[in-house]
Length: 223
Length: 223
DNA sequence: GTTTTAAAATGAAAATTCTAATTGTAGAAG
DNA sequence: CTTCTACAATTAGAATTTTCATTTTAAAAC
Image (cartoon, each protein chain N blue to C red):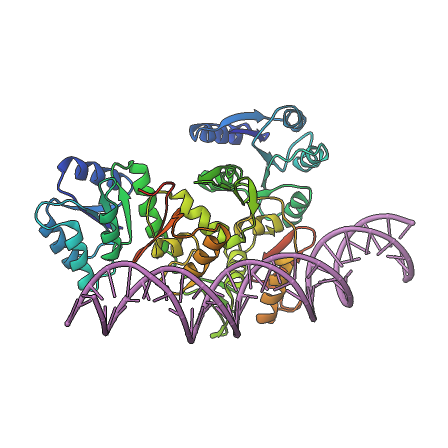
């Protein structure tokens, strides 16, 4: 993961650079706006941290120029506090996010990680002949797509991510529905029914088994 | 945060104990089942890690006895690999989760943290005269409740959590809707409309302002 | 100041998700 | 082996969420 920092205050850029490197990122620093723009356009980065106040070429201008070139790299602005108008301009110019100075390193790191969680989603899981594309959120059976709704997809993906381990109703409600208190309704059953129907899973094709009194489990081959 | 480990193998319990302490938890260890049960019933823990195979009193029996006493403390089982039947019994006996041996410490820690994220949710936010109870997921205005649906609540809570900072449409779609690709539809507008209606927010009561071309912002007093 | 344009607010219909009632089934108890 | 009981499957209907078309509003261009 490669990050570009465009920041003229050496103290700050050193601090950020060091901290991010310790977290395992590859870091590149530009202490001047024009230099930063050049790097942004020629090299490939996974994220750009852009200071708002830069001597030669302002962060806003850099951001606009990058977007003109149709670059989609995520840009995160570092802006001075209380400049509401500026942050508006920043976001309008195509920035993905902004963080107010002064910020803690922890805060920044959290924001950065969120942006990466996003990108890392493209994985394809499988269950028997079924393929589940987490990035595109699509399900395929024998290479033809089966249309799933949001929640149906979430539930199926969850079971297959935990292939081979039993998923209790409690865990499912917590992890898929994000409900963190005692809760009991037929939702899970209803969606399970829908999923099995769409995938033609009869008891003879037990890719998703019911564990009576507990929950469900997804398994490739019956044991 | 206080964790009880019930595990007869000293090597494992030491390893876990030390690791968890380094993570900032208070840890108590019982090397025998009966001792573990006694501690579980007399002391107050935030989580119990229970080994399945214990010499005197098995983990299953301990779990059942704890639940008999109506204790609701989360119980996480450590079970040997491939004992499907056992994990079923465990979950049926009232365990909240289980993890297969051998497991990495990271894995265990992740699971533990999930259980705690749950409990730490009870916070009350405010925006002007509006109160938002994150734990109960309820909204109050002048001490009388205003009924919100799931998504309405999520969106309002998100804006208020970020009170004072602009939330771009992109960020909202990512963080509230969990959609991590380019997406554009009127959903946000529709929900914003619903929220403002329910809270009688007219342009004269600008607790939630529209930032044209960018998104929205929640603010206590207009500046 | 008027016109033009683009974005936001609104309303209504379509789709999804959830609730709740009914039917079916596996395991326990007799 | 039969009956009973509790849980799961299924279904239909209600509520929520989303899409889409229309109206309104704000900012930009003239």
